[in-house]
Image 1 (cartoon, rainbow, N blue to C red):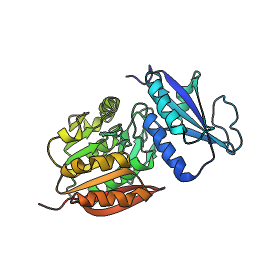
Image 2: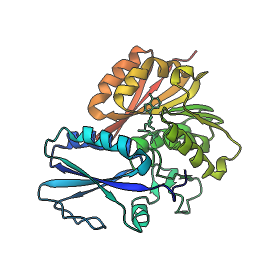
Image 3: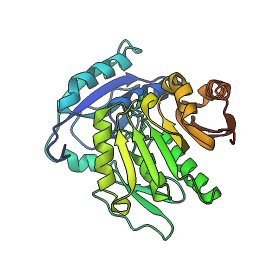
Length: 307
Ligand SMILES: C[S@@+](CC[C@H](N)C(=O)[O-])C[C@H]1O[C@@H](n2cnc3c(N)ncnc32)[C@H](O)[C@@H]1O
């Protein structure tokens, strides 16, 4: 679907001040609905551009952008996320002319790791020699590097390929979203890359994003909605940035996809959930290598025993 022809709706969520952990979980739920991100304005901060009522004292307003075609499921999911606050409200607003230009302001080129710069297609930043530009259209799936979990995975992939020479040649990215992590691994030399997602829109978005990165033209990179159990083979690197509960559910299948001596990188995990992830995946026979934290989110790395 072309971004320019998609009709977008602004969903406004008004939530009371609350503790940081609860807000993080809430924001995570929003991100499942609005892959391109969201904006938030607090009552005591300067208002965001656009015509809206001032935010009432003690409240925060979230602006969530969803495609018209998914408005109903998005509205239901957001309403469910709001049930934790009895007074929270949800309203939808048609977007005024020029909103897309304003929305674009939220997506600026971002240096996500020493070698990865992520940018939307309407920006074409110069990158330094040795750096890689990843072009991602932020509209249709999760994964722009703005979220800590994506940035943590990019940092992990960057470091792994810097430390290992040659780096992993076969890579599986489970829950690929925009395809950003699969694209990143391919840019650093992975030769056979598979990205899967159970959301068919994400698969389409990942394929579109691959085309936005011409340096990868002709490379063996396949995106599909094949369930993990049906993905054939084992991979030198498996990466999965999904909710902790899903990672735990998929643990046996994820561990089984890691080649002997290979790596598993998991994210989508809050710091306090890391011990459970370590326990579950070490019980699958993997060794815990490293846990990296970014603003309360973590990436947990494992290795499979050598053959
Ligand atoms: C947090 S996003 C990660 C996107 C991207 N890999 C990144 O790091 O930014 C999680 C993705 O996992 C997908 N997903 C959720 N459950 C899944 C499952 N059981 N199997 C495959 N994909 C799943 C979602 O549709 C979503 O695109």
